[in-house]
Image 1 (tube, rainbow, N blue to C red):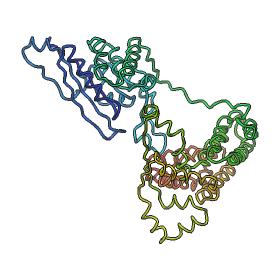
Image 2 (cartoon, one colour):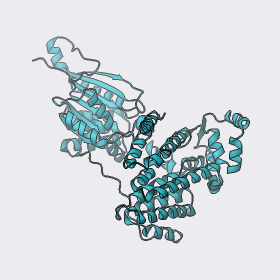
Image 3 (spheres, rainbow, N blue to C red):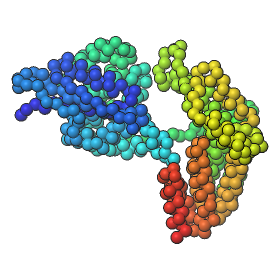
Length: 505
C-alpha cells in the first residue's frame, strides 16, 4: 500500500501567528526528514481576516525509494485531513462546516475561547454564536478532540497562541516528530524564546494528559452578593434602600445603582432607586404570583441601562479613563514603559452636538436648517489621538461636561421617554402583568447612539403603538415578545413591519 502524506490545516485569525506556526511546522518536518509543502488562502471577511493554512508532509526516504517526488495538494479536501488546528472556537466550527473535520480521520485541536465576529458584535440583539452548541458540534465530528482555553494559556505564560497550538499539536502525538525538534525550532526563532517555550510546554502537557476538559457548559455570571456596608458612609443610605427590596431583585438593583453612580453621581442613583421602589410597590399589589419579582427585575435591569444612555459625554469619559489605557496596554502586551498610541475614530453628527448643548440652545440648533447645514460640513470623520496631550484634553473636556449633563437636550429627551415608559408599565401592571413585563424587557431595543439609537427608538415606538391592541388579547405578552424578536431581526425594520401588518389582519 502506497504511503500517503500527513495532511494538516490551520485556521487562524489575523494577528494570531498562523503564518509563524505554519513556518515552524515546515521547518520541523524538514528537520525530521520529511518533504513539506505549505500553502495559504487569506480571508478578509471575518474579523481581522481568517486565513487557512494547508500543510502536507511526506517521508523523504519513501520518496527516494519510489524514485520521484511526491505530488501534493494545494488545498485541503473534504474527508482527507488528518489534523485541524483552530485558534478559536468558531473557527473550529467553520472547519467542521467545510467538511475538513471527519469522525473517521481528523484530530481537532482548538481553543475554547471566542473572538467575536463583526456580525456577532454588531447584531441588534444577542448575536453571539452559542458556545455550547459549537462544542457539541466539534465533539460530534472529530475523531479526537483536544480543546481548552489556549488564549488563557498564552496570556498566563506571556506568550502567543501559536506557541500554545504548537505545544498542543506536539502533545497530541498526531505528528511522528520528536518533541526536541519542536523545542529547537522555537529556540531558533530567537523571539520571546523563554515565554514561547513555557507556553509550548504547558500546552504539550495538557494535550498529553488529556486534561483540557472543556465541557461546553458555561457558568452564568452571578451577581455579587449585596454587602452590608457601603464603600463610604455617604453611600450607606443607598445601600440600605437596596437591601429593603425583595431579595430576588437586590443583586440587579445594586448593579444598577453602581452603574448610575459611575455614570453621573449618587443623586442620580437615588433617582434610580426612587423609580425602582415605585415598581416594587406595583409588584406587591399585582395579581401575579406574590413570590414573583419578574416585573421588578426586568424593569430595574432595563431602567439602569436606559438611565445610563450613551451620549457624547459618556463616550468621551470612557475613552479617557486610566483603566482603558491599562487595558489596551495589557491587550497589546506592551513592555513596562513602552510607548503606544490610541487613535479614536469618531463621526459626531449635528444631532449629537445639539444633544450635548443646553436644551434651549440644542432645540434652536435643530430647528435652524441653515445652521445645521453649515455645521454639518464640519462633522465628518475625525481621528483623535488620545495618547497625545491635545487629543486627550479634547475628549477630557467633553467628559468634563458631565456635571451639566442634566441640563442638556439629550438628557431631557431621554428622561421624558423614561418617564413615559414607566407610566405605561404602571398602567399595565394591575390588569396585564405579563404584558407589563414584556414592555419592561422591550427597552433592549433602545441602545447605542447615533443612527443605531434612532433605529432602536423607532422600533420601540412602533411596539408601544401596539400596546392598546395587545392589551385586548389574552396572548398579548407573547405577541409583544414576538414583535421584539422581529425588531431585532434586521436593521431596516422589514420583519417588524410584516409582523405588525399581520396583527392587523
